[in-house]
Image (cartoon, rainbow over all chains, first blue to last red; front, side, top):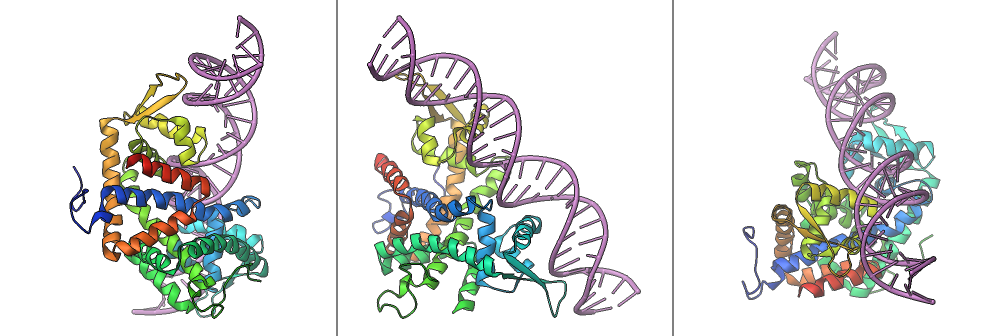
Length: 170
Length: 170
DNA sequence: TTGGAATGTCAACAAGGCTGACGTAAACTG
DNA sequence: CAGTTTACGTCAGCCTTGTTGACATTCCAA
């Protein structure tokens, strides 16, 4: 009952890494690693009645200052109502500033305030620290493979967004 | 204001992969990739009023038949109330069977029924299909790097659990 | 000027986390 | 044997973060 394309042990000589068992291990690794990945920021956020959703908003506003709500919406992949709830608290808490667009006044451009940038930095620091430790431990070759697998695993539209974000910053 | 240990561009000759920008890209890649990673099973689960929590329970019961509630609890890292809600629906829907322990009658050992195994297979199939496509696209070297970074990113206790699960199956 | 796009807001709801409290049965321990 | 601990289940209530649907406003563009 294995799905089409599945590879059983002994199926191919150089394809042992495509075994169902290997894939299963990869799935579990993603599950456990993502928990580690979010653990440190989550701990900080908990102390200030914010959640992961706030972190994500801060992260992407920081990376693309002046982004519009709609743009952020499509990056985060949530509904505007869901995002709006998060933005509302961030704005009223003085972490995010929302400026009416100059050309198109319907749009709101989002910026981090000093306080917002400070929190983003704090969250980013602990998350990067874990990432850096992992990267350093395994070396550049492994990191390159890591990045390539992740990219191949994204939905095509998300991969395009991801690549666009990267290019804008370099 | 960079945290201790951060690496700026030009800081070290062979350490360019530890740049804050590189780490930031890794963080975003994890975010986007995890969305892709869960997208296919989520779509199936939606049609049957189940969620990701049910998938996780099915996955780990399938991988370790006869596991106890406590063991599952510590793997999933949730509270017993949270897990119990999920298990209750899976049991009453006839996807999971709970048997009282033979040695220790306080324990409940969990097994997938035929129906449960069928659903697990269906969910696993689509998730592995994406994984396999990604793996095949990048090759075994990259996959090895991927796995090593993920493992290095886990919390130590989760890494131990992950390795134990692997060993039990091989 | 009218249609549609971008935004915001209200209401209601669900999944899936959490804490705290309580009960029961079984096992362990002094 | 008595008392404590362990494993599990459950009730109640709360939070975050996601969802839909409906509706108002503003304003660009045809």
